[in-house]
Length: 237
Image 1 (cartoon, helix red, strand yellow):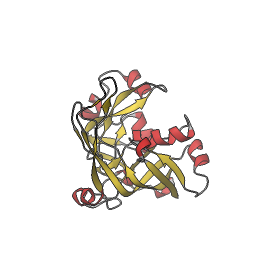
Image 2 (cartoon, rainbow, N blue to C red; image 1 turned 60 degrees about the vertical axis):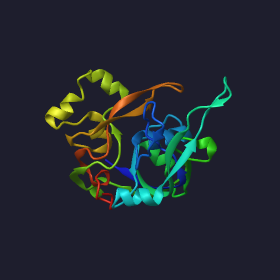
Image 3 (cartoon, helix red, strand yellow; image 1 turned 90 degrees about the horizontal axis):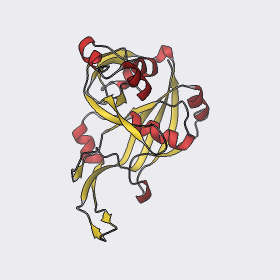
């Protein structure tokens, strides 16, 4: 199992949590699979790409004080020509994160040089948010992987839609009852066990115009897997 490690930098990044009917949308403080993988596929097409990331920090509170700001956004109802109730959205400024991309043939071709790659990630891209620069740092081979147990530092779907459909509705129950894993978590990211799951949902596109929300492991889930997925491995904790 091999990975490509990159740095990710961005001046303004809006990755707000989705809260139904809520006027305040907090930001995530990690780099979920859905965001970074989707951003790469938006640039390079439907390639065999799987990526996750995180922002290395010792204290989330200190990170938020330094890098989180609030945008007040008032969308308009065009039919009535009036403003809807304003949304208060957190966004990140001047951040540097780490991204880990599974070394597939497509990924090797994309990152065959050390030249930085520009991608766009998150919301409000038309308003100047979301431009990121990815720069390859190194390749991580089998012999370089440190495996341990700890708290997950990112967000990863437990499986792709096809695997979830094949395994049935009670598929996720095995993770809880048996400290199990899934083919996707094990084969793609080397997660051998899920000892304590903190669940949420990430969006997976199924076509150019539609998609579904997939059950996912969120940060602070306790797993056994590669060290770069664990809080504390890079000072993230």
